[in-house]
Length: 399
Image 1 (cartoon, one colour):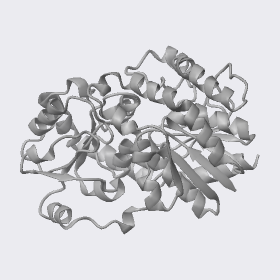
Image 2: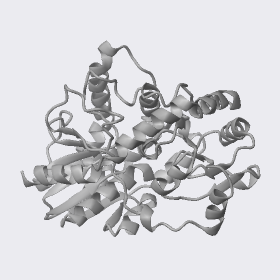
Image 3: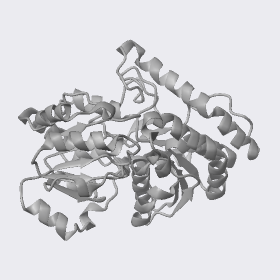
C-alpha cells in the first residue's frame, strides 16, 4: 500500500511518526512523511521519504515570551498555514491508499483524505478520545472525576472552533464543502504505553493503545569519545533535558537545576532552549541529541519537561523521572507518573525553584521510586508499539 503521514509539531511529535513510517516500510509499504523542516532529520536517518510543510515551529516556540502563551502562538501558526498544508497534503497524497494524520495538521489531514476519497487514520501521542477514566490531557489541573468525559468533549469543540474558519477556507480552495462539525468516526491509534495509560473501557472499538513508537537506531549509535569517557568515569549521572521547549525563563530554570543537583554528575541537553551550556558547572557535561533508548538506561534519573516521548523513554529505561512541566499535555504525564508512584511532587516550569526541585530529586532517588520505575520499565519493554500500529494501519487502510 501507499501511505501518507502528515504531522506538524516539534521533534517529539515527528520522531514517533517517523518510527511508525519506518516500520510500515519494513512491512512492505510505500510511505511519505510531511512535517516541519526542523524535525525531519530523524526521517532522513531512518530512510523515510519526507517533505517539509510550510512554517517554522522552532522560530515560533523560540520567540521571546512565546512559552507564556504557547497555545495561542501554535494556533496562529496552524491557522496561517492550513491552506498551504492542505494543498501540500493533497499533492503528496495522490494515489495513496490512506492518510495517517497527527499533531497540529490533523484537521488538514482529515480534509485531504476526504478530498482524495481515502481512509483517514489518526495517529496521536496523547489520548484524546473522550472517556470518563481521565480528564482531557490538555487541562493543567485535574477536575473531579464527574467532569472527565465532559472535559474531552469541550476541548474537542473548542479546538474545532479555533481552527474551523481556517480549515474551511482551505477546504473551499480545493472544492470541498465546509465542514460543520468535528470529525469523530475515524480510527485512532495512540503511540502510548498501556502500562502508563490502560485502554479505557468506554472508548469506541476503533480507538487503540499501541505502545510507544520507537526509532530502531540505538544499536547502531556510536557515542562521542567525550560522552563515553564521562559515562565510564563515575556513577550513573542525572540526565537533564527539556526537548523542544524554548521561549521560557532560562536563567530561572538553570539556577533551579544547578541548585538542586549541587555536585552530582549531570548530563545536560539544551535542546531548543538556547541555554548557554558553557556557563554550567564543571560537573555538568553538555550533550546534543543522543538516542534516549541508548542513553537513559545509563543514567540514574531524568529531569525533563514531560513531553509524551521523553516521558515514555524515561519510563521504558526503568529510571525515575522528575517532570518540570511547562504547557500542553506535560501536566498529564506528570499526573500519570504520580499515579504510578514514580513521582510525588507537582512542579511547574514557570515557578520552579532549586528547593522544590531538590525535594523532587530526593524522592526520585528513594528505594520506592526506583523500584516502581524499574517495574514500569520492565512492563514497557515487553511492548512493541510499532508492530501493533502497523497491523491496525493495514486493517483500516484496506477498508
